Length: 269
Image (cartoon, rainbow, N blue to C red; front, side):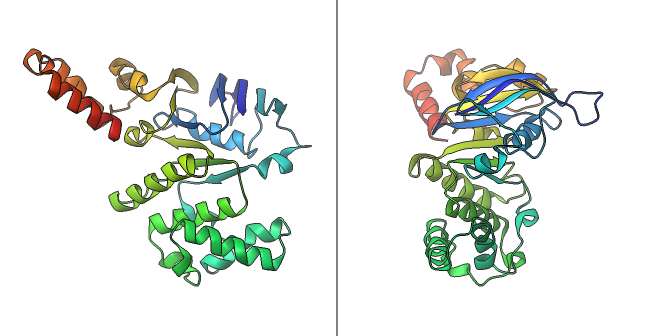
């Protein structure tokens, strides 16, 4: 369980990037944190992994406040994939990049080889072990970054705008992998995103605006609040927008089969 208790943070000691933010993310939950640029969502990701320290309040894991004394131990539970995967590559090929994290954890070589093989297979990157990172597509790079996190056996996976630089095909690949991480591997998944089509697939959505948490609930409820989304410079997902617009037209709204079909389409997206 991750808990933010009245957390505030400022980069310049003048303006707050986060202001008195509180929420809980439960084990095995998929939570999307959404908001426009400058809303504070990426600051939350940095606080979660201890890259920055809260000015006020506490970031807690299983009721234990994150501190200098426990940061290394807690980081073993948490993996993060950043917006630009190139910033995470340190090895000259896929195999050595994943090995780097395992070496830091002093994993024995034989076990390391097994883990690299196992998790590159799970993300369909086993055939690319000798490829240089710069020769991979954006989606493939993200898959390698996720394989490295899985090899370290992280319970919590944070994806900070992990699809923002990808083409539609790469985005679809990563979305399917995120679903698998959540359902098959039972990971706690936190997606930091402005893509509401991705956010609507999660169990819960937290909406940030100007450093404040302004909403927290299930996607179907959050995305019905058009005024809140508009004021936060966020667009309603296409499938839900189609249902919403149809519901305003009496002839369509009275067509029960059509409305049920539109709602089922929304749920599948």
